[in-house]
Amino acid sequence: MLQLLQQTMRILVFGDSVGQGCWDAQGGWVHRLSNSFRQQTIRDLDFGQPTVFNLSIDGDSSTEVVARFRNEVDARRWPGEAFIIVFTIGSNDTWILPDRSSKTNELDFAGRLRKLAEMAGGYAPPQRVLFVGLPACDESRTMPVSWVDLSFTNERLKSFETAIANVAADTGVLFVPVFDKFLALQATTNLLIDGLHPNDAGHELIFKLVKPVIDGMLRRH
Image (cartoon, rainbow, N blue to C red; front, side):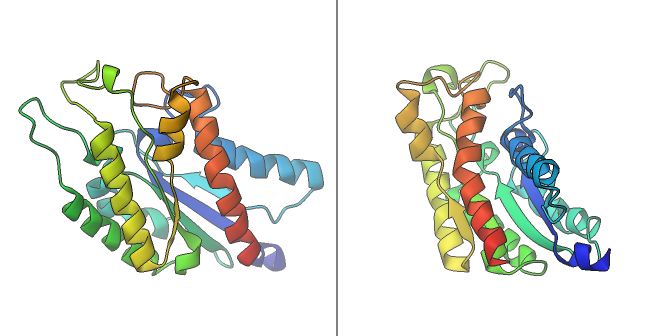
């Protein structure tokens, strides 16, 4: 049993409603990731497949993830198992109030991401830490969104994804861009259920972008 544990990996995903999988009939891209490893375990009797823990919470921004990160990771330590740590946050940092003021700016956001990269380094090397980019939105439905008087724009989403990419490059962790793929496909494919949150097709796209990167991380383990 100890030998089996030493071969396995725990993948911890910290995110917001996109990470949580809201509005996807299959539970979101993180659930799709977990299910892909589960299917391989069943098909090949490969009990060394990683376990995915979805620690995403609807409404969270980078501020909330910084506050809860260490407690969440420490609660999931297990002898002989290593971590891959994934951050899929940022959209909730970009919203704009009706008076055009904003929740935060790119500089403060980047500072919190650096803090997360630093904290993650206490549990996993940089090659096993991953930042995931932000989906584009449909501004015809997000200025404001239908459920609250807040607006989201592609300009800010792209700017904050650039901040994520820059922090990843500076800290040596991995990064998966999402925004440009979303924006390019939106002209021909419906990827959003409400203008902001990915639908089934949107989550499938994110899964297909992230899964090869996770596979590469596992091969290097």
